[in-house]
Amino acid sequence: MRTLIKNALRSKASMDPITIKGWVRTRRDSKEFSFLEMNDGSCLANIQCIADAGIPGYADITKMTTGAAVGITGKLVESPGKGQQWEIHASEVELIGESPADYPLQKKGHSPEFMRSIAHLRPRANLYGAVFRMRSRLARAVHRFFDERDFTYVHTPIITSSDCEGAGELFHVTTHNPYSNQQPPAADGAAKPGGGQAPEDDFFGKAAYLTVSGQLEGEAFATALSNIYTFGPTFRAENSNTSRHASEFWMIEPEMAFCDLEGDMDLAEEFTKHLVNDTLENHEGDLDIFARFVDKGLIERLRFVAEKPFQRVSYTEAVEILENSGQKFDYPVSWGVNLQSEHERYLTEQHFQCPVTVYNYPKSIKPFYMRTNDPDAEGRLTVTAMDLLVPGIGEIIGGAQREERIDILRTNMQEDGLSLEDYGWYLDLRKYGSCPHAGFGMGFERMLMFVTGMKNIRDVLPFARTPGSCEF
Ligand code: 4AD
Ligand code: MG
Image 1 (tube, rainbow, N blue to C red):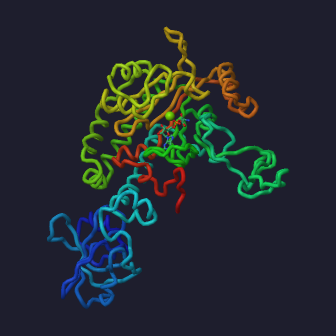
Image 2: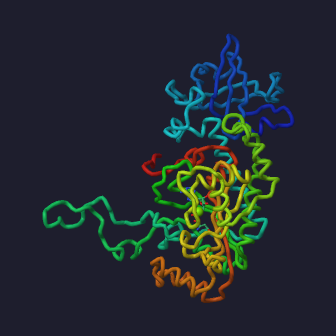
């Protein structure tokens, strides 16, 4: 039976026999024996194996090069070397799969850009192995958090006919081939671009998209099951080539019936702290590599975030802080503008120096579903939106209390040009047993960037999809 290297390394006692299987990281030979550093991805650490010349399989030793798949059977014994407790004295080695000399991960210290070009091999590199183990743990921590609080996990659809954020950043789902030229040529004989068929003739009999958010469907379930969350892939055809935007990313969206903005902000902060705490407690050594090679201050910052209360500030106050900051921003700030990443980062990194929730944004810059507040002293209209900003990243959570008053919601939708017929089901949630409710969306990759210190969203997605790039 095969033992994972992780379990071998944390064994309480010697094991004889033990079999491990994995990939060779390095090998050193002397006349009488060879040292093999083996890794199987179950943990960051390698296990050192000593294979005496002449044991079964040793004839293949020169083919057990970096990257080769190898099985080793032997005895797990205490290691005299420092840094690791256990090593394996092999009684048999088996070459399972060779790795020719052009294996791209021979040397350490490749650039992130190069690693993206070999995204099919990069999980074999220490840093990326750690990233994707962290990703798995973080997903588990998400489910644990909501499970402990009696939230029901709802699978909202990936194919939808609504544009939740109203931003028009939609990928169409169609069986029409936009590249084929199925239309008769134009009068001048020039080929017309394909597509152009009516949505009614398409697969669903209407226009359909990849979802940008499960929120609207989530609201239907929250106003039935009280507290729900979704956790799944979301898609945005947003042409932003930044280190924080991907075309396909995962979002966690809780939605709570009988909850207001205050309760929503409370949950967002508690959730963020929970994920940070879980990371600190359950990283199984993986955080060390980020702290060493990516972000020296990582662990200290995570501790700080886990312990200190977050700040809260209204949009109006935030704009005042920015206006009085004496800072020169690329995008000037005044009441009514959307906060840019440079503004968000100034607030959380310079001014408050901790995570901060900004709430009550101008109505004009936010989607139709947010609840309208009473006009402020100057008659300006805001909505119960909130964004949670963290140092190094900016926005990781966006949410709101939802408009539960059917008349106001209907007016918002009309103003945004949404079809009252298409969204009739959404209005029904206000017609039958309407109640105050609220929720938010957390970008899973942004949170993963925050807890690992990784600087680019492309490096925490197994296979990143970004404008102009859909490899693998
Ligand atoms: O602020 P957003 O657009 O909010 C919504 O979609 C709401 N419907 C959520 C809700 O209330 N249920 O997106 C939520 C979060 C952002 O704060 C950000 O962390 C992440 O999703 N996000 C992205 N992450 C990676 N790439 C992108 N292109 C992202 N767009 C948003
Ligand atoms: Mg947002």
